[in-house]
Length: 187
Figure 1 (cartoon, rainbow, N blue to C red):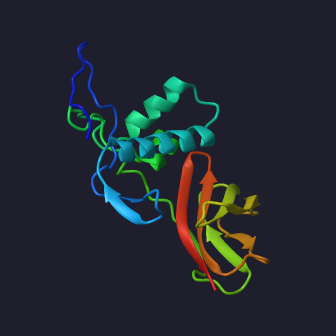
Figure 2: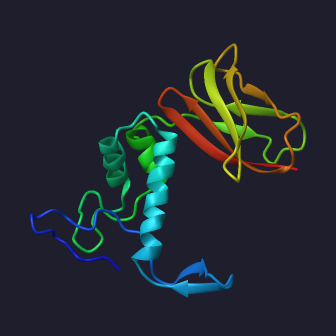
């Protein structure tokens, strides 16, 4: 639903793409309907850009655009049909931090018990004695965020989940450039 490129001065267009065919929407009468067009795909890219800039307010406009383009599905081989492709928030947010050489030694990490009923969560992660821990509910709200410590990297980290309601959560761990995420089910 976009014009095809290139532009008159030779630039690739469109820049990014999003789904705009058979998009489910709520019509003005309150009923669910389906429609096609850039009117439904462009707001998705705009919302992605707004959310990314809110998460990274220190970025300039140029850095925001560059990270969105670099995250897209066709960044290495853009064309004039989809441009750089479909953007990926996670890749745009974390960038090169997530690129890992295949021959690097795998770092053991484990979160247990999972699912968990009690309050004490054990985490083997990283090689240091300090990491950041975040527990995020599935509405995207951070419900627990802290720096976790341990005496030796041979021991697990311990996190107390007292007061955390049953549900499905996302755990995000970070030690320097090392970032790991996993789901946690609490019942």
